[in-house]
Image 1 (cartoon, rainbow, N blue to C red):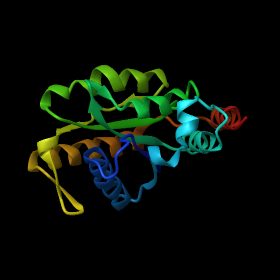
Image 2 (image 1 turned 180 degrees about the vertical axis):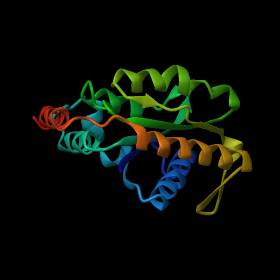
Image 3 (image 1 turned 120 degrees about the vertical axis):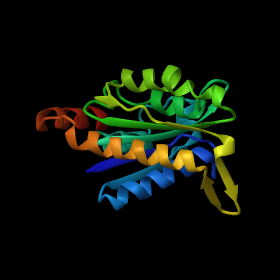
Image 4 (image 1 turned 90 degrees about the vertical axis):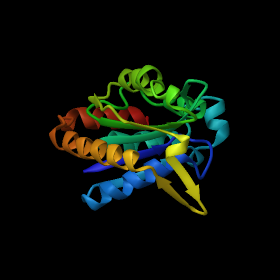
Length: 192
């Protein structure tokens, strides 16, 4: 199994990226191949000027086309997910998440931002034709604490994250894979 992870925070380190990195390690312990991406892997000019022909965007799309799932993390700003992440998502092909299972992760300043995942991020992921967008995990800033170079999660967040990852792993195993013809045509369109 192959999963793409995407850190949607413009900051590094960040709380949402900490959730993502812990999730990557958990998946790797289950023998899932994880290919990590961050917003910093893409040129700002390509994102800002909607360069659909960017080699970085095309390479990301090609990796995504051959993956089984997407693990995506974002901070919540102004009751929505990261604008920089939205800019990247807007450059993906229309069916970029076809036959993919997606697990969204998010952090925000308060518990009041928890619904941003359901009302802002999930509809965008569904518009990219994700086969299944799971419930996901939200943690407020007080639940993800930076100590030196390490992040510590509150006990409840750790339990919710593991439960979500177990569901993600099961969903990856039961997902309907793209047919060879579909995968080949998707890849051809994305690299054209």
